[in-house]
Length: 102
Image (cartoon, rainbow, N blue to C red; front, side, top):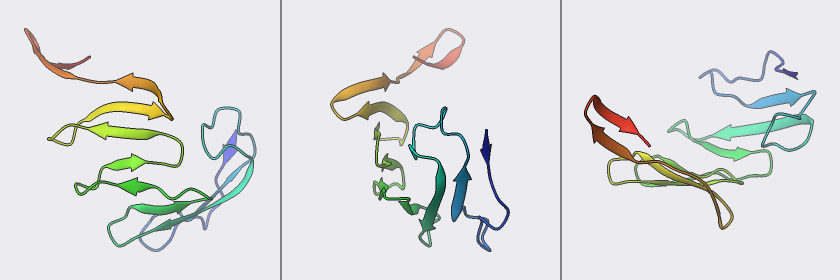
């Protein structure tokens, strides 16, 4: 169970902290305890615990400290990698019943 304490959001309702009492299902942060968050004026997290997330020029999250995300020219998620290992690839196709994600 992960428990969030009140007061962990700022006046703009951005998360500024979380307390995890059980991290078995969390990918990151990988430890129990309190994690601090910081956001910029675009509502992008600039710090999550010890990680420094990065974003591309379209404000897409490109790195969260663990996973690297790739996007196509239209800003759609196309890949997720952990180091050199691809965790998933995604492609939008125009099928007989309309667009689908593979």
